[in-house]
Image (cartoon, rainbow, N blue to C red):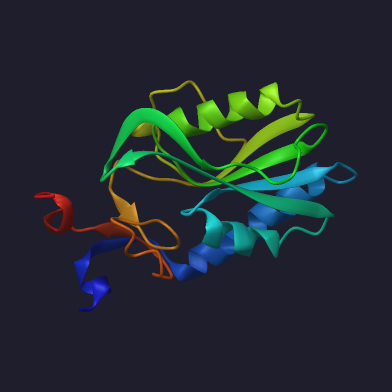
Length: 181
């Protein structure tokens, strides 16, 4: 099976993704000069973006990972569940949450609150994709790669049923793949 045949359209090309990471890396490097930067990636979707943006950041930084979920299939349940917590104590750190997509905002709003309670010095959000059409929580990203329409997207770490993460671009998944599931 060729998974690319299940993609209706390419929304963000491989070349555009490289450009987005380079530009965000420059901006983050400027903004975090002399700070105690801790990049926190939300697994699993953001791992590809985290790796690429990390290589573009030129200031000292640490990385850590969380795993949380609020999705079942293609829809957010509205309930955030922790699957893996941070290994590094965020107390006093300038945290940059690195996320693949800001959709409903429920997960990021919850995470930001948890990290604030743990005495992070500052907390900002960097998202590759911003999909404002579905926003349920009052939250905005400080760094945005691209604003996208209300489409179900996969690739570059984003998945449907744990598939499609390995695509080198962001594509719109054909509805026929998930409509009856």
